Length: 334
Image (cartoon, rainbow, N blue to C red):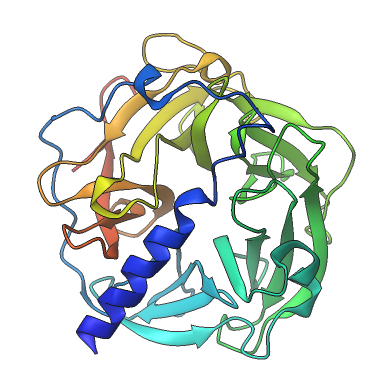
């Protein structure tokens, strides 16, 4: 079974290689050589995890009653659970009967991408992406559940979509609620970068037509936003460079911060993330390749950085590390 799972994950890595890259005719992106390779800094290895740890694009939440729930890319949105943040097991899928409302964007495929999972107001909220490889004809949908268990999720509707005539891509959602109780959704991949819309807290759906820009690399590889508030700052974590290439992946985790949830976000050197800025906090080294598509959540012991990375054999695996904050208020992985 291990060999079968590894083969399946390797196949997923290969087939996903073009998911986030727009066709050349749609947007003129700089060549890969325009961006530095991940550094050889001595980042810590992923923390120890066991069991069913094959994931791609993970999002993780602590359950109010204890234990953890993970959602990740897979058919009908794949789910995993853990009692202790170490041992994980398969928990089925969010939509075991399928999600036919996504077929306009997936061409009938049941593979749904890059979920964002949270627990608010007594229920679980799941934002997730529907698209086809290499296209920005994409959409983000919302579902909610009282328990998070497979088959308990209720479809709540379309949140935002992008068309081939747009210069953005509506995938990789992330929900953040600011100190005033306002709901925001950041998202984006390649094209013109990371965007943000406001949501109606009563429904979780889009509140108005305003589209804000948070970060970009002139069409180059940036995606998977995650925003958290710590102290006086909102921190925007993104993934630079390329995922989905197995052990050849060059994903790395970058960050900027702002006193406002809507930006502007600046890196440690004062560069705007809308102009390609970003401070690296995690990159590949040794047998850990292309760590990224990160999520951040607060636990009772530490803030936790959740991500996937690729093993030498190309399998996509769950990565967990503690996330600390230095004396200047910048995050670091330990």
